[in-house]
Image (tube, rainbow, N blue to C red; front, side):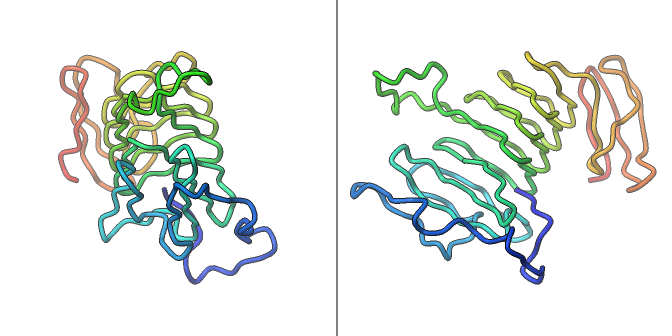
Length: 210
């Protein structure tokens, strides 16, 4: 998760992390040390991938609850939880209150922890505020999920997705701006900001100069 603050950023009263009293783990669970960075791997199958170059929630706290959810609380109180079987690669931007799920058909009276589905969010993806990612999908590199969108199927790399149910309406560059190419057919585009060149072939967009 990308966060605009850094270790050298000034803090104020609104930037204070939640007090210890907000989380009391059950005896059977294991709490991740508060000193651990948000990018550290959790317990069991929880995975938050972090290459050395990553900038994932620099000011954060992680804890493990009874439902085995890693709660990432940034200095700006982002309100995002990363559950079992969710893998975030490098450079993911999780906007406020976006949601991951872990079970496709949850029921309060039936335990389905053995039915968790793996969700993979590939590098550079942006997840808009209040968007929902239904478990079991893969979001391609640098995909851009609009605010409030509900993702229930795989997303192509660089795809711009909006709506409920979600639909693709365009393509996004690594610079975070829309690429003026059609959804299908073919074409090429050079980003005026980065100089990176993109090619569209058979409904698949690729960056030729990463």
